[in-house]
Amino acid sequence: MIPRELEAEILRLFHAEKWRIGTIGREVGVHHSTVRRVLSDAGVPAARLPLRPSIADPFVPFIVETLEKYPRLRASRLYEMVRERGYPGRPDHFRSVVARHRPRPPAEAYLRLRTLPGEQAQVDWAHFGKITVGRAERVLWGFVMVLSFSRQIFLRFFFGAAMASFVRGHVEAFEAFQGVARVLLYDNLKSAVLERRRDAIRFHPTLLELAAHYRFLPRPVAVARGNQKGRVERAIRYARENFFAARPWNDLDDLNAQARQWCLTTAAERPCPEERTRNVGKVFLEEKSRLLALPPNPFPVEERVEVAAGRTPYIRFDLNDYSVPPDCVQRALVVLATEKQVRIADGMRVLAVHVRSFDRGQQIEDPAHVQALVDFKRQAREHRGLDRLHHAAPASHRLLAEAALRGTNLGSLTRGLLSCLDAYGAAALGEAIVEALEADSPHLGAVRRILERRRSELGKPPPLAVALPAHRPELRDLVVHPHTLEAYDRLQPEIPDATNSRPVPNDPSEPKS
Image (cartoon, rainbow, N blue to C red; front, side, top):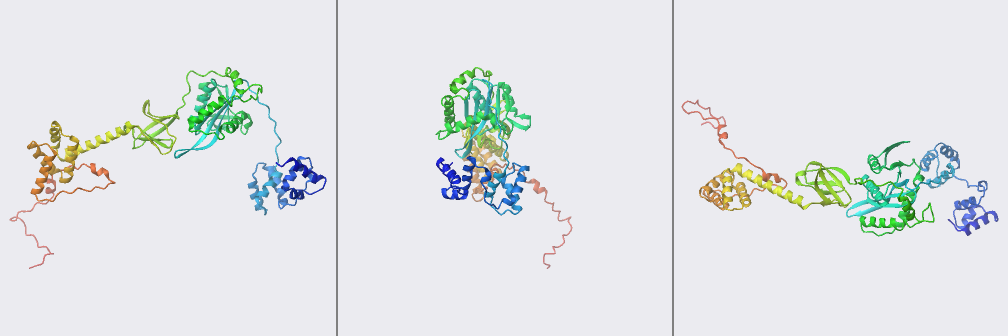
């Protein structure tokens, strides 16, 4: 906008001094289009505002004809079409030419919509930007419900616009209003309308369950008719400018607490558009008695997601990992989540309860789950060790039983016998255990002394530890079952008796005498 004094000067120079439009714009320091607007607003006929010759003039008939046929065709597409026909200009000037010749629809008049108390509420989502939570970037959405008669506002913020948050916003709004409007008006958002073909509408099944529970009628506005939900649109703009702008807050709970207080104070103290002599809060007290009563039990608002536990005792939910008992791996489970809590269930049995995290890449663990996994692994290792000893040296079972009667630590004894098995072999260990039992010395030290003495008597070098690859830990628990070597002796052919055998021909490779 330009000052009123400058508009008056433009009109004086045009009418009194007969200056041209370009001269006026150059001398007063404004664009020639501004001069044309001022003269047009002052009622100067268009015939008295001749346009300067333009390189687009030869293409104007084509532009007008195309726009009459396709009035909503974009200027960028029309620019490509005239370029193919020889237009040499740039797109910025061409847009002004298209705007000048685009047909304008006639202005539409709207009826003033009035509703009865408790009859209607309007619902919509509002986008409030992105928020960083740890390493995660979350979208902050505001759920807004406004009563059409009193203009009472309910505002609730969520990290995301999922269906579970949409349902929770309804339930908390009904509790805040202490009642339910008979008709809830929605835009054609996916949380409410899944599909629409003119008057045929397919609502979201969860919204229909919610409507049946609270006995209200969901109703979407007509396509491209935003004026039908102007009350919630104005409430969203009012919340942006009066509440959210430049407001400090610590976390989502703090922001929602401030929003609740704002709805009950500042937003409720503004004048009611229907009755300017009273504020919104007083009109709402009158409307509240006309709302439908709440049902005895609230609608369930937990987010339900089916998940699968892999080989590790964790499930992935909303960018984070939550622990489960180790006996629940590789199973299909269900997550029931609120903003505060994550419950993991298997059918009717609740397996784990965790505090919900809105961060990214976190591992939320229950110490009991971790300890159960450690105990399970320890028992598995002990079982595999005993199994190896039983197959390699059957007498080890008796040795462990004798050692238990004498109070020996069986874990240390098992690990020691396994190390001897790796170093000396199964046959030597079995013979050493038998000798130790015969000498009534069921101790690890006695077995080691016998093994070392026998090794020394045979003149063998000290045993060396076998270096197993670190990336193959399963080799350490590999069980090798020893067996007799008589089968190999049977594979050797029998040597015939020298008295009955034929003479064996000389080996051609041997030199002749």
